[in-house]
Amino acid sequence: MGKEDHRRIEHRAYARVGFLGNPSDAYFGKTISFSLANVHATVSLEPSSTIRFLPHPVHDPGEFGSLQDMAERLRGEGYYGGLRLLMATCKVFHDFYSPGVAGEGISLHDRGFTLSYDTNIPRQSGLSGSSAIVWAALKCLLEYYEIPNELQQVDSLPSLILRVEEELGITAGLQDRVVQVYGGLVFMDFDKISMETKKKGIYKPMDPELLPPLYLIYTKNPSDSGKVHSDVRKKWLSGDQHIHKLMSEVAEIAEEGRSCLLNRDYTSLATLMDKNFDLRRQIFGDEVLGDINIKMVERARSVGAACKFTGSGGAVVAFCPKGQLQAKVLIAACEASGFTVEACQIGPASVTHI
Image (cartoon, rainbow, N blue to C red; front, top):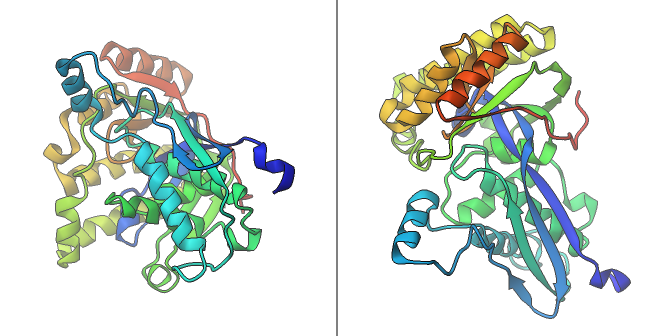
């Protein structure tokens, strides 16, 4: 790298919103998602003599004012920050690209680096904050080690990100990682044959301008989303016909939603958003979805907005089919209930839409 040895590398990755079809991505289904520019994660790489990971002062605390402070922090934020994500990214990157290990077999230089991160993506919000940190870190490593473009196939990178999270025991599907790599708005078909033979789905970027104005609603005290797939996954794997039928209906919502977007049929789109949440509720049940998550959806619906989860819970996305006046009523109603509301800003696309 020559003179570039001393330069700082920094990359950003955006949160994402599962717009339609989720959570069928983990069940050979179909989804539509978009990257959310409102919040993001940033990872910085500084060349150094050794490999170091800097803990985040807020998300990786090692010091507390009192035992009570520590207990309250762990209750609200959990035990894990982003440090483990950086470490796992480096380990999987090494395994994938080093010769004689498991991957592409190229020579990686032995210069050190220091990794640090920052994020303003709300924790446990169903906005894919963990994979945003991983993707930002992976981009830094790809640049630092000068990985050739032919070894950075855009449709394969989401699987590499997922492999990092699997390294840490995180259960997830490809949807989040695909839209964070592609950016913008993406239709995804996780066709069973393609997934089993190629380890990836069929991804079709779309024009983000097709989306109507959307609103992100979230809470500062989200429920834990880590248990959402557990029982349903077990039933699905055991061949439960009822679960298979409902999950297929969820997947078809994405297909229908794609047609609605292309035709700018926003009335039908609103119906599909509500149907997506109703099916999810039927599949998982209220106890798994969480009381506060359901309240966010019901609050939005109380003013006539269509609403559904963005991911596993903690945040929802809403659409006001009657326009700006209805949106103002939505914002006032949600804020009166203690929820935060923001107009969705679509993240930049890295792959041109078809």
